[in-house]
Image 1 (cartoon, chains in turn brown, purple):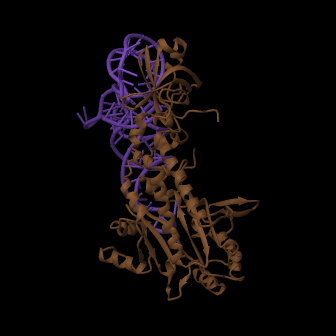
Image 2 (cartoon, rainbow, N blue to C red):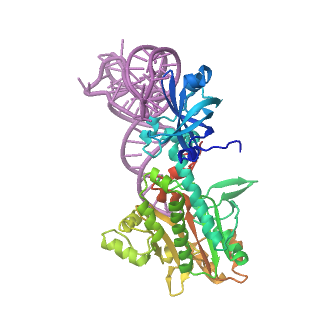
Length: 442
RNA sequence: GCCGACAUAGCUUAGUUGGUGGAGCGGUGGACUGUUAAUCCACAGGUCGCAGGUUCGAGUCCUGCUGUCGGCGCCA
């Protein structure tokens, strides 16, 4: 890489007294005709560079004076530790403008735009997402996001899970068919996948422990702070495992994410205003498990109208999680509320062996999973009772005809976890280019 | 699909009972040798989302449309 010095290192005092060559972008500039202060940023931070006309000469001074916000520059100078506001600054000796910014089209993301957004998103910022990415708020979020992805990979790889890829073009649905994106496919219809699950189950007898992180697509017209039409789905599938064991992995991976963020991204979390003690709690606590029936009783005792057999929608989740200080598992939903691939409870076939993990602070569901229906007879019974056509699922049924075994897995909404752990207001803040029912650009 | 808001300069906005649209930031020019969202002076920048209607007169009132935002249902 044609770059030797990083602003983060300058700021941490690694280059005090040294001559350095900074490569970055102009963040802010102010000053007079004789002295100017240029705040330069790179991917590691910001530093103030002091430019004096009599030191750098007229040509260099003028070129920096005319450098608008987001001009790319190479600046050479001496690092000085000072008592001033930011601790370290660079006394400039030479500078070069690399990519100028045309004054007729100045950088459109302004302080006022950011203030109004108040950490969130406005239409303007969404339209200018490609430029908004380089603001400190988005940069910080993208670093946190990277650590979340890394923590998920580490969790599974450390436990000998095999990363496995499923197709994105599929013929059948995992969830209800109404939320499928239909795409033309050489004169036929195909759909974008909603989950790798069905294809993961096909590989389960081969790999036994497998996971993925991949985009899933759902054509939900949802307008909420926790829905995207394209979201990143971390999924795992494990052979010979019960609902309970799958839940242990769900808890394990979420706690590992929280711990990783505390270890690697505390500064970033704090700069977003996140209370680290909450993240500590999510990393260190055990996640309680309650059955659907208990949840319904709790809700009824709080005066919420709910009938047994209803799925728990977000408004009910919110009431339920209001008293929670840590994520909670909700288990044993009524069979009628869940799709065919959930395995009925052998102890009471009214229920299925499933779980959702609900995040506190009103963030809601982040994991859905459970044991799979694994015998041929049972899967056919479940598909038929649901009224789902068998044909697109022939391959899925076939898996059960050759040595079916108990198995299970879960899907985790990675963007939701980023949103929750970073304390963001909206899932859009946690992904670089959010897609929802009204936006596919930029 | 349903419910509720909003739309004024590049951005953020003010605009009273209807009477020729103001400001801050950003930009340009100028002053200033230690500024921290620097400050001060000046200039440029507007089809008030679109289409109708009411009126002597509409940014303001009415109708429709479009777009955006928030929420619900569904989910990760």
